[in-house]
Length: 573
Picture: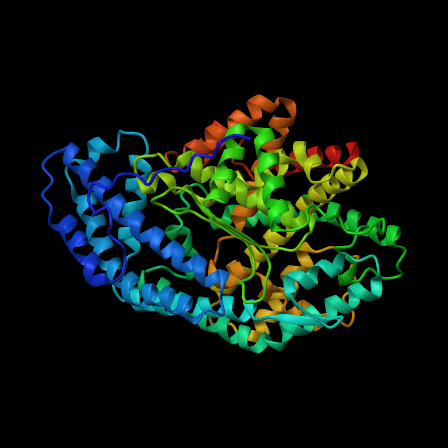
């Protein structure tokens, strides 16, 4: 067993080593110093940027811990209050200073020289975009939006159902959808669905409020709608909404027919007269659900072993997180839904949050979040915080590629060969299900924000129309129409991180291409993966994809080529 070496916190050059973020009053002098400082040459400008980066990293990490604690324990009022204090009393004060600092940088006569150095061109491009979008009147609106989005985590975290006399989180109850007992599956599905629907009006009202607030933000910033605002805000310089619509079209024509084939095959194998929504997660051959691990501890150890076999460095990344207590993996009451990898900007060692029960999906989730974590480790020594924050299309490439390349060592989770084959098949089938769902959520969002004054009834109609375009025609929803009407409410991205979803589709395509390279040559494929990740935010998205020897391309032709590869691999299992 390799010794785990815990990274040291980098030396501070601007703030005192013992400085902690408590109040705005204590932070303000550092911002004022940066605003006032004279810059006489390019070296001064680089030092100024380094000091700004240090300040922002310390603040970002403090916010990170407040968010982590709040989501780990949504029922802890102290943690919620601590997070809310930042959102209400610190964040709004930072925004106008951040804008002043951006303007100071953009106006500096030494920027031109700096732009010739690696990474600075991208940084300055982003700063100019932030200046263009910044409006003082949006600061209180963002505070309000952050307060509203917190309600989604609290509502979802409080959702439980009772099955066989036991209180279960919806994630725990979801495991029963893999039961080979159809009656048990239906009971679990109906109870989960009923529990979600209990809050449907509350969640509908919350979403309407968020759409209204977001539209006001975009109008204030001189943008026609929130979609256009977010494309600028996310720095989507490498593709347009039209490209997204082309992606939707390619998924509808190239992937949905395969989804239909799989559903038809599933219906036949299960021997059911009608394929119902509760028949979608069970093994098609009516085998009991795959169990990848026993508990959180077992999941951690097996994941470290899997990563280590791929490359010792990868194993070391997860080992460090384990040693530092940066893993909270098991589902429990009072925990927010979902899973994430939270980068901690100063120390450089992220935190993984999950709701694991014992399913294979939980195992792939830690492969996914572990890919994000590796990304953080590979960029942690870059000079500036901005260099370490890649575009989301690259961040998700790191995670989705890891899901696929890690399959080489899934025998650690599934020593039985037949189960290993099942696991790999499930993973590849999941890709065929994921791409249409990504297109569904993305197309729905475009419509939502292009039509911000829509009614809940119009929203429901549009949802059903989009859902029908990208779902199979085999599943029978008779009797479950209301559940289908509100299926979108379970997608936390719609509430918490709007327009962060198309990246999963683009990155999924990139991940298939990267896995294809890895299958052809393990060493070169993994090296390409690491080369791309090390670039952080130093290049454009196409440039970073090229470093991995893959294309940033979501044309119909390319999608067909990649899906043919997936089908071939499925056939070979």
